[in-house]
Length: 323
Image: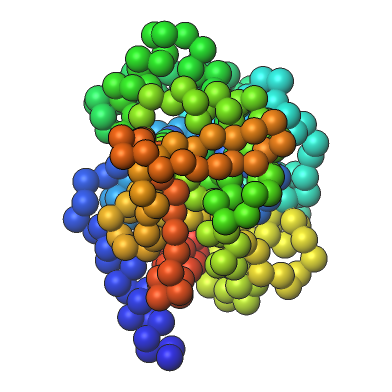
């Protein structure tokens, strides 16, 4: 069994090694759940492997530690130049130990354990302005946006015809962690900003693939792997966040990691896809799907045969050592 899992990891890490690097924008509510931190670690691993270019990170959690934590993780992975954009007037301003505790850790001499450029989220640029700038600089039909938080930033980007046209020209795929396509229940990312979610699903001009609650819920990141697979670093900001988020040991759902994996490796066979159609959401945060032959929306499906390989791939990427 161990040899089988090792072979799966090797195949996962080799997949896409020769693919052209995909330009990615990561839109996250960093601080509301620890899967955001693991998803960001995955993106850095995929960039180190030459599979993506992390153009920037935009934050939909309106707490000053959120952008700081994103910045220090980027710096930890040797990419402190990656711009971070911050939502203004977001829906979850509350702080969280998973972002604050690593940001405040200091060495015995008083220096920050995890250096960063940003002292506060107030120093970050406006998220929508950053989205606009990043998209303008890229080739038409090339950018993948991975949204794993609220739809606040992207819905605001659709406010003008010029920006709508910019999205239509530049974005190849929106890979979003949102909704529940098995049960008619509200899902956190949709429920917290229902107006923005409705606008996104109604007006986004391109392709959307949604990873519903049920996908990440079926694959949990093992606490034992947090302690073992990240041991290459004596101090790791993602491990610190995981330990601060809940009392250890706990296995956490991989919701946001699934959206990253599909966004960068859509042809990797890690998931199946629904028929094309249209996703809508309501005032309670529930999503529904209607099949349409010409629809631009799909959602991920997962077979039992895919589950073990997909989980092992996400764990391997999230814990990959800095190169």
